[in-house]
Image (cartoon, rainbow, N blue to C red):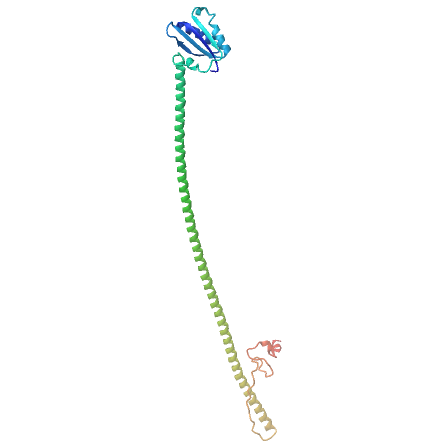
Length: 282
């Protein structure tokens, strides 16, 4: 015990109650309880507190007229020895039983609170576990959905790649077709050029042949005229007429513009090559 102990023995229950009231009002002490004695109507009043407060409280009842000849004895123990708690705090002491019961009830309440707290903790743990499980399931479902989305994306990418490859192949085919068409057109153009050249050459040949024939006709006429002129001259000179051999010389190709044998231009060539071109134009 750390506090001082005050003991007062009163005769009669009423005197004991008056003494308790006086003691508690006189100083700041705590009532432990009232222990009735066996026989004689004696009651032992037990209080505790500081030494000074306990001493003042016990002395306050000695001068009280109401308690004259009702106080049998009183004692203050400043420093109670260890081991006397059982004599002070026991089940026989009135008032202390209630404190014990209240204390037990409080302990029980605290224990029940602790138990309820533990139950609440367990419930919270279970709820947390369930939440964790639910979250884990949600995460797994989310992962599965993400995996599915990735697979779908991969399939879409593959399809797009296949489409791109097909488009490229089609473009390559179109380019090849265009190239073939271009080649065909080039071949056609070359063929047309060749045909034109051939036609031109044939036309030139035909023109040359026509020019030759015309030149032959012109040459025959000139030879005949020359023969006639010689005959006339021979008659005038009264010379015997000799036979004049008329040899038809086939002249070379001449210009079809001027028909002059001195002109080097040939049929089909540019007009400015004719020696009489400038004269005619003027």
